[in-house]
Length: 280
Ligand SMILES: *[C@@H]1O[C@H](CO)[C@@H](O)[C@H](O)[C@H]1NC(C)=O
Image (cartoon, rainbow, N blue to C red; front, side):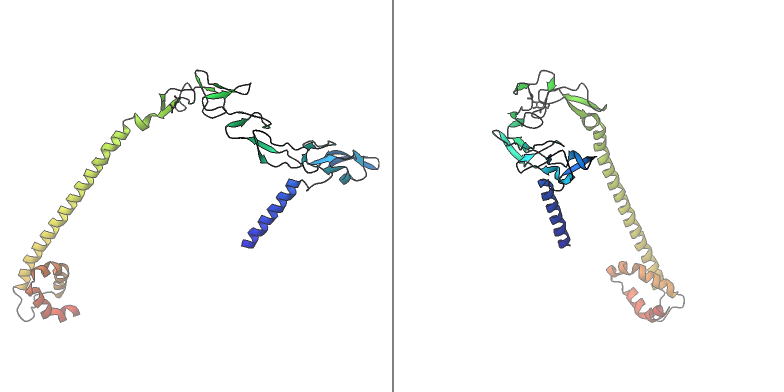
């Protein structure tokens, strides 16, 4: 895996080197036949014309020397690479097909597209002028980025459900706010429904707990009454009236409740009838 990445990286690197040297294509790219010779119409990028016609298109053009570049398809000479000077800073090297890229020092801005000179960088609220200085934005206009021309303030908010909360100034357009987020009473509604839901949940929970406790109490009471009925007639020997299945059911469901009361009757019941109950 690592080896593959290494190879890929190497391939990219070598490609980049070839590309930057402009050595991928040498000679004439497009030509026409003229007798026994060919005449070049267009050299490969980064190549300059040596002679117009000849027997071999590869010898009609040759790459620019280091420090030179060309953007023209059929020029006898290459141009010297620009040196970034003065307020300029060097950003990218020159190649046979591309001139040096220069920038400008901090606080300065490129004066043209090629950045062949630097100008004072105009702050927010100012705009560049033709004489390479800055002037404040006229009333009713703004510039919210350095070196940006002043634009008129918006007359309305971009969305219909917005309203203006601040007027424009030299460095900022009008400020808009979405109606629903602050003015609409909907958030207040939400704040009121919040506690309402909470109260409902609490009430429901309380109700459920009460009902459960009530059911448990009733069940325990019922069981106690029944137990008395069952236990009383129980003689030391087995009782023929007791259905073993009922006994199991009673024992299972109310064993815990009986434990608290330390009922000896249940225990005796178990010890008496356990063998029979387990079999049943
Ligand atoms: C311009 O308006 C913006 C937004 O309303 C504000 O933040 C800024 O401070 C104002 N600038 C000046 C110079 O008044």
